[in-house]
Image (cartoon, rainbow, N blue to C red; front, side, top):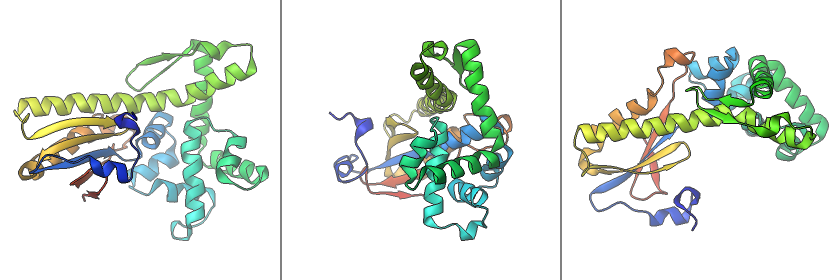
Length: 260
């Protein structure tokens, strides 16, 4: 209490240490929700960012503010990050204003510029809303359904809540599916190679999986684990987007060093 999913980054995480001779390894899907949004929406500009391996927040800021990437400052990138994640949760102009700071007019201008730039995302979100209203459910990439009773409500606020949840459901649901399938495949890898004593899958937190691996075995097994996670879906089937996985290693759960 809190459960392990809710132990935030910081001092408390330093208390979680591996057994002597082992290291903690965190394999983390990089910006997976935005990658999923790109291939589900088939938005060409967003797809291009990920296919080229660009920093998504800098690249979105560059396109929305109409400046070269090298001219994107910290504040522009922060604003792009707010709206990048905000649109995945059905954020409207009022919520955007609260999160960005500034006036409602500025928030509206930024909101309009974003959807003018990323027309495929705009069309996709509208399609999800209308399809959910028609069918009563959304589907993940793998076909898992989530039903929304409130989507046909005559009460505007109930319908609005259902619409916001529906917008996010295919994206967040696909992310959950990917991580669960990754855990199954890694578990199969551990069993197949009889690694139960040297590779332990400890925990899943959102888009990352935490392992404890014998120090002498790290080099041998981190690469195959990363490859398993990155190939849950063949990039050819998702518009050329790679499910990039970042690996960090350390002596406790807080002080981890990112591997190249």
